[in-house]
Length: 188
Image (cartoon, rainbow, N blue to C red; front, side, top):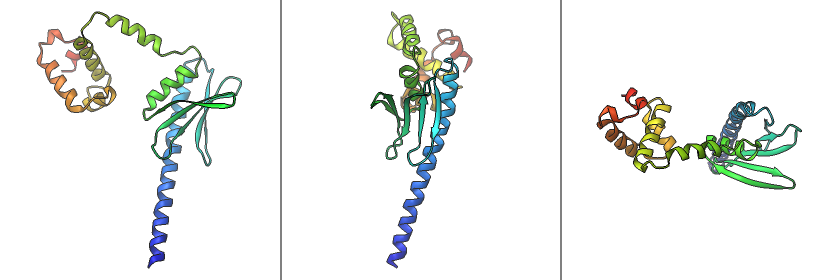
């Protein structure tokens, strides 16, 4: 009886490991597809390739086919890890669960001249002089519109609890429609 239990647990461990590896490879292949879209808009200076095997990863190369970055998924935490390959050292740039944040960091650190902070800085300058409540309201309503009116997705994107978002939306939509931005009034 003891041998059967050992076999069963070894089988479950092996199956869990295989499922984890399959998940990692699937996520990395999907990341390659998204990176190719990002890189196509930047003049094709970078390319992304999925590398399978024992340690699956995404290799990011420049025009000269030299590796400039590597993305892996940590087996224990499931987090994306972006390493910049410079010379002999691997410099970890970011460890994140958000694929969107990862794409932003890749564009910022590896794609020369593609700083994503410049448009953000310009947008922030337009907000100077407005109250935090007004800025928060505009951000929430525009994010809600971006998410097609889905409050769960909106709350996730904003990093706030769904209950908090719903409470804020109840206050916003209780106000007269003439005070709401046109896009928010349309979603009513």
